[in-house]
Length: 204
Image (tube, rainbow, N blue to C red; front, side):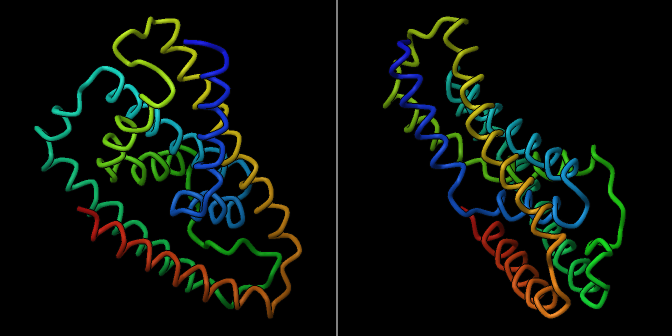
């Protein structure tokens, strides 16, 4: 695998990670409501899920995903339920003053990590995406262990870097929120979480 192919893959993953998505919403909300550390932990969970799917694609284990489809379907329902819970928690805290964190229930860093991981794993079709996406940059059949390590590193830096940037920006922005704007944010984010829950449930 050449340096140019790794650079091209890095750029593509960078763009994909920066695109608006449920994972971006989750990372930014965690950072804004519970601090940068929680946003970073959620981002780490998202990256871990992506890495797992990349490994499944690289080693041609897509059939394994189909074999345990019932388990992955259960993850989809759990992820959707979690998004609904987040929406309810966020809405209940709408009347708190700006200096108070907007998510009343404290969560552990491990919980934030699992939230990101669960949300990512709930979309088992991501394996098919990577199966179609990665061959545009490399021949999966000829990858060495060194190549796989480089691929994983590129994914960590690209996807993780973008999510961390989102988390940092969200935490900084949270400190500038006025009461009026905070109420607007609660309406928009609550609706976005509910819409995301529906989208997760409707995934094929």
